[in-house]
Amino acid sequence: MFPKADYRLLEDPDELARVRNDPRGFVASLRRPAIIDEIQNAPDLFNYLRTLVDAHPQAKGRFLLTGSQEAPLMQGVTESMAGRVAIFQLLPFSHEENAKVSLLLGGFPEALAPTWAGLAVVSFVPANLSGAGRARGERHPGLADLSTFLALLATRHGQILNKTELAAPLDFRCPPWASG
Image 1 (cartoon, rainbow, N blue to C red):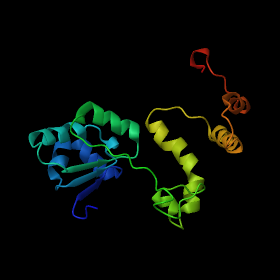
Image 2 (cartoon, one colour):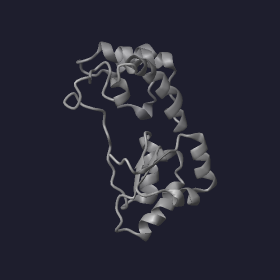
Image 3 (spheres, rainbow, N blue to C red):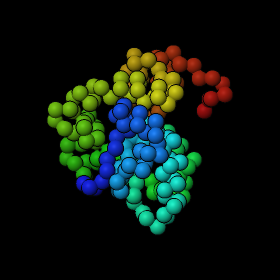
């Protein structure tokens, strides 16, 4: 959509190192409009961007910030960019948008590509267990527990949710304060 925008990916280790070593210089080097992808990896940038936005509030759309981890991204937005941003949550494609969308493959662009479809589905659970959750400091169950849980969910598709039935095979004990 923005072929002339300056695109920077903050998953690239070299780019991320430049940002962390000189955030002011990084922001100054951006051509406008600038797309900063995976902004949650450099939350200190929000303060520098806010300064530029506040200096020229009438100049809209100079920075497009994207991220795949909603919690850290939104924390940065609410702490330093409130009132200065428009937030769009992009969901996967629906069946109306793309005929390749299915319950098995889902609707993300990578999963719909023929060469990536099987790999994306097989890799989804382990990738989410290992990377994003730990980056947020969350504790996840083991892969075996999660696989069992997903299998239990699949067998109960279309039924009334019974949390006790789902928890029993996993030997999950709910603390008294968390019941309900």
